[in-house]
Image (cartoon, rainbow, N blue to C red; front, side, top):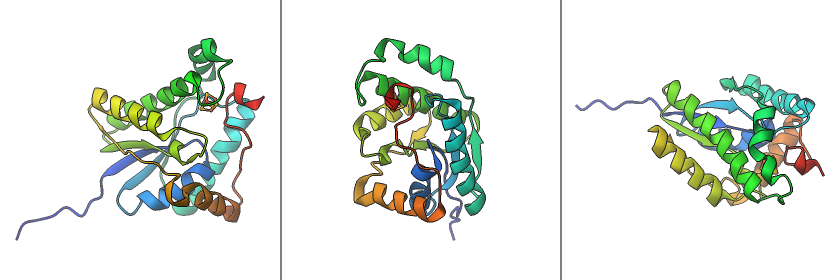
Length: 183
Ligand code: SF4
C-alpha cells in the first residue's frame, strides 16, 4: 500500500487586521495549516497599527491560530511611497504598498520553511486583486516559494468577513490605513 501524507501544506497568510483575516482563515484552514502574519508598515497613526493588531490577536487566541508579527516600519514605507502621496486610492502608491507587504511575507515564509504565502488583501472591494495576485506570483517566482492566488471578495467574501467581525466584536476601521487614505 502506498503511503499518503495527511499533513496539510503550511501557509503564511498576511493580514491587515482581524476583520479581513477571519473569513479567509476559515476558507483556507480546510486545505492549509495556516499561520497569520501581521506586517503592515503602511498603517498610520501607530494607534491604528495597535488597534488592528489587537483585532488579529483576538482571533488568533480564540481559534488557536499561530500569529507572527513583523516590524512596524512606517518611516521606510513613507519614504518608499513619498513620490506618490497625491495619487488616488488604487494608484501607484497602492501597488508599492502591496509589494512591500507581500515581499516581507514571502521572505519570512521562505525563511521559516512554509510551503505557501498569501494575503487577505483581495477581500477588500477597494483593492485590485489582479495587481495583488500578479505581485504575489512575481515574488513567489523570485523567492522560490508558492503563492496562494485568490480573489477573496468573490462569493460574498467581504460580506461574510464583516458579519463574522461584527459577531466577534472585532475592531473595524473606516479608512484603508495609510496617512494619505485618512483624508
Ligand atoms: S490607500 Fe491603502 S493600499 Fe493604498 S497606499 Fe494607502 S494603505 Fe496602502
